[in-house]
Amino acid sequence: MIRVVVSGAAGRMGETVCEAVEQAGDLELAGRADPALQTPLADLLQEADVVVDFTTPEAATANVRECLAADVHAVVGTTGFEFDSMHAEAEAAARDGKRARVFVAPNFAHHEGKLDAPSGTAKRTAELIRDAGGNVHDPIHSVRLPGLVAHQQVIFGSEGQTLSIRHDSTDRRSFMPGVLLAVRRVADLPDRLTVGLERLL
Ligand SMILES: NC(=O)c1ccc[n+]([C@@H]2O[C@H](COP(=O)([O-])OP(=O)(O)OC[C@H]3O[C@@H](n4cnc5c(N)ncnc54)[C@H](O)[C@@H]3O)[C@@H](O)[C@H]2O)c1
Image (tube, rainbow, N blue to C red):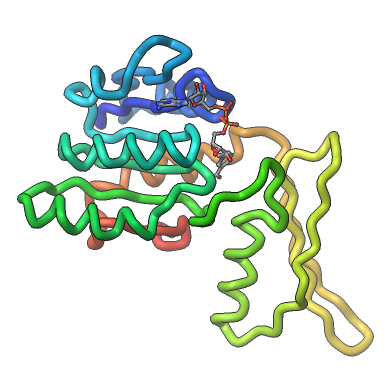
């Protein structure tokens, strides 16, 4: 059994992660860390093999630092998490004999406004298409409306035709297969810090 502590457990994503972990036969929910629950992460680290963090950029940085110090693996979904600086810290922890790995879901390093536009996922998709030799239209278009959850469409244009690939997320549970995959794989990742779900697929 992999023992999982969820950080940000009282939040929208955190609650959904707790449910998903409880429903997984090979995972054990070892604790819920959140100031709203009066449970600091530090009090739960001894119970954890992996910490899943869905908090705020500032809290996530501090939490991952604590995980590295306690030699506990971290899976970070928090948007705006400063993963660049964490590279060096993960390497330093390894030099101290720590085995902990950090996995960061697709999100972006800079601090974004309340409604980041375009989203980290959209920017990452554009980057991957560019890396593969595609022409990416600038700017990336963003729609922010009540009633939407998370929707992404990539339109490939050619003479007289288009091809669209569209993904609609209508519930936070849609993120859970990726979170659980990261929880199961983080301990075996070759690098101290890995960014991007595509690295696990
Ligand atoms: N990577 C993805 O696919 C993905 C998907 C959805 C949301 N997100 C991101 O996840 C994060 C959380 O989103 P949400 O909608 O659940 O937010 P939320 O505001 O509902 O929950 C955040 C929780 O973190 C808690 N928290 C604050 N400081 C903490 C600390 N030091 N330790 C532990 N917990 C702490 C808060 O009390 C709150 O309960 C955001 O950054 C959001 O953008 C990422």
